[in-house]
Image (cartoon, rainbow, N blue to C red):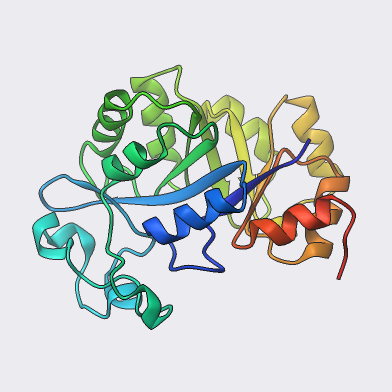
Length: 244
């Protein structure tokens, strides 16, 4: 069965990576929630997609150059709608506390590894260990060095390799070079050859970011493991046989 993962929460309906989007994802009965993590100057893990504050708060500057106290009260919701002007940039630990009783997949994407954020992998593992959750964790990243390092620190942690373009033997690469447990391709790169390779290497495919019903149905017909989407309800409808 193909799982439906809410991308940055149900970000088609509420501002991404906020408690509002995570609450909406749960309301829509998503199988999982994907969220993004950066690290502040004082080594706090925060949930935000971009490396800078501009797009979602209107403020200038990079996340890494601020202490959390400098950014925690910024308005991270008005860019989406005035109805969400009280939404803020949450700490990862607070989000995990919020989700701890939910039997879902929690897909944490590290936006950059230790080359940009020294010891972010250690900090992430420590925060995960502090919260006993009912669901399961999956850590993914475009920074494959960071994923490899994470695995060296904790071989039991489940990880995924993100890729935005077609690769040669991506499942073999993900398994044998990175040591990852899943491959996360862009949906436009998924075809029958990739499906066959994933089966050969016993590599789950978690596909992003799928927002059209017909694309979701096509991917489900190929038996991908998960579909990551801004609109979980639309994808779930497609998987039940609905179409545009």
